Amino acid sequence: MSSPAKIKEYEAHTDFIRSVAVHPTLPYLLSCSDDKVIKLWDWEKDWSCTQIFEGHSHYVMQVAFNLKDPNTFASSLDGTIKIWNISSPTTGFTLDGHSKGVNCIDYFSHRDKPYLLSGSDDFTAKYGTLKPKVVCKL
Image (cartoon, rainbow, N blue to C red):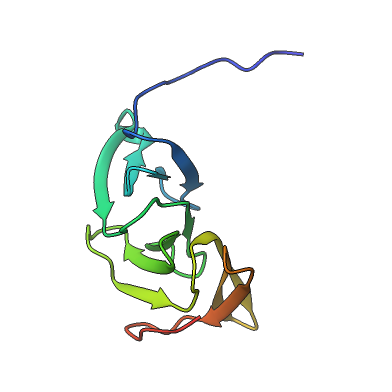
């Protein structure tokens, strides 16, 4: 049995990294951190950071790609969930609905509709459908 080998190491953030997400079809990786920043990395460009996303007022606990539209992703912690497009450094829209921090998020599909699921410090798990250009409450 072979053992894992370190292939690449780089300093990605200035604080704890909380989550990473791999794009389903492109050579991209998202990372998020307690430094309130999300970064998009391109492993075909020697792991260069190709986009920085800022907009959270607190730590960013998780990022997740939308499987129905992989050009978008969600991020969470500060009581909100932000929806982003990988080609823009500014958030597309913000979802409110939890009274405390949002620790985890994930996308899922049911009957061809995209949903976003979230879990929070307010002891609730919530889900809702996503409609383009509409601010939804979860």
